[in-house]
Amino acid sequence: MKPGIHPTYGPVVFRDKVADFAILTRSTATSEKTVEWEDGNTYPVIDVEISSASHPFYTGTARVMDTAGRVERFERRYGGRGGRG
Image (cartoon, rainbow, N blue to C red; front, side):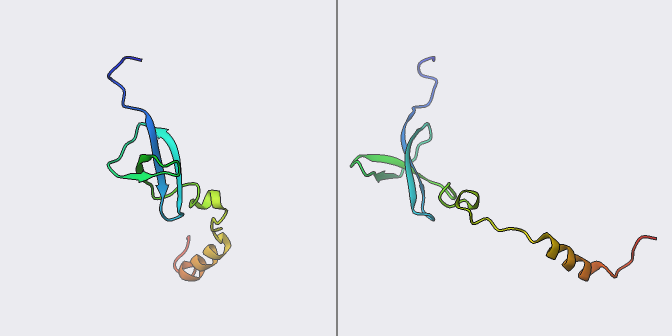
């Protein structure tokens, strides 16, 4: 690697406040905000809106769409109007 052209790569905490979940990892992303981690050191923290702790795919709380009900509702609303000729 050429020196001086790459961003610094260091420890960063990514925090999902909704799920009360945080992970310490390494990244080139940085932040002005800091947080004291479990090891007693202070690291930059980046707040994220969604993580594996709050995403429906990973938590198993994904909603199943009721496609039959949607079709029936559409037919009730628009089924009697016009038609093919």
